[in-house]
Length: 174
Image (tube, rainbow, N blue to C red; front, side):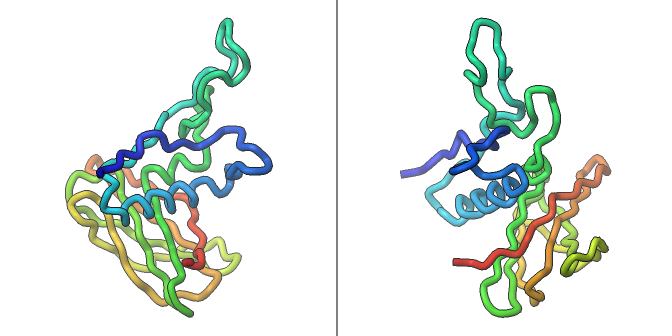
């Protein structure tokens, strides 16, 4: 039976006990999309809202709507905003080896993405490689990598606008 994941969201005010902090929501969002991509039953994966509901609607109670958009009600981008356009997962699958998976959204056919990296606490970003996506904008690659490497993806849309995704930490695959 096909599955349509239609209500993925990013909380503006996550629960301190069971919520995902704003600082890690882009990684969790990307990982969720990667898991869905790998499940052949999933036919669609969509973001629930672009912008949060009014937290104080007339005649309503505080937060009676939804706070699961990529922007706050006031329009400010949440940290996961850029991760929606350019999700990226960096999974360590063996010692010194990482699998990179991601998507350039909304790519219109095959395109190219640049994978950038920074080692340790360095703020200097360098180009690791340029990858070609498939016709839907997805890409995947396996690389050698030190343990403390961080990644981000950069993509230039057809209109010439260059977009850069959020910093993605390498995670240990289960």
